[in-house]
Amino acid sequence: MKKKLPHHHQEEAVNLDFLLGPDQAQRLASSLKQLDDPTRLEIFWILCHREECVTNLASLMDMSSPAVSHHLRSLKLAGLIQSRREGKEMIYSARKTKLVDFLIRIIDEGKNL
View 1 (cartoon, helix red, strand yellow):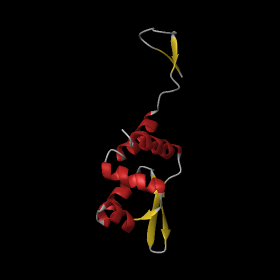
View 2 (cartoon, rainbow, N blue to C red; view 1 turned 120 degrees about the vertical axis):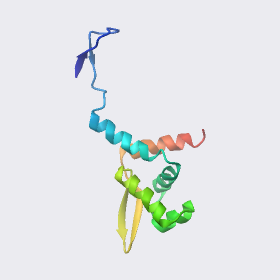
View 3 (cartoon, rainbow, N blue to C red; view 1 turned 120 degrees about the horizontal axis):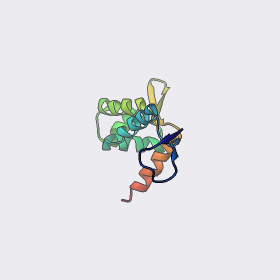
View 4 (tube, rainbow, N blue to C red; view 1 turned 180 degrees about the vertical axis):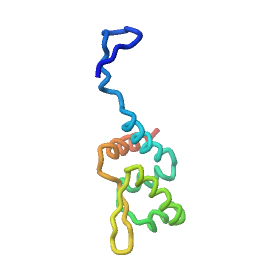
């Protein structure tokens, strides 16, 4: 999409194809917002490296299972993790998406800040 802007710093009509649409911006902001919480970030990081059930995640995080389940629900609604049933248990893992791959790189770089 080309648009004429009020101030002409460069060419007269500017290509604005790089802009996010309202739906894209909302989905991305919602996903990124979930990692604003240190506990969810840590749970997400664990699930980027291994599949786990709620009980094991609760043990790793030194939290109750209901508290971990609450964080998992938020991460799942944001599209960052997925679950599958194994017998009576739900097993969680990071989704295989470009966004998750990008977030893994960011977190990995940020570990040493």
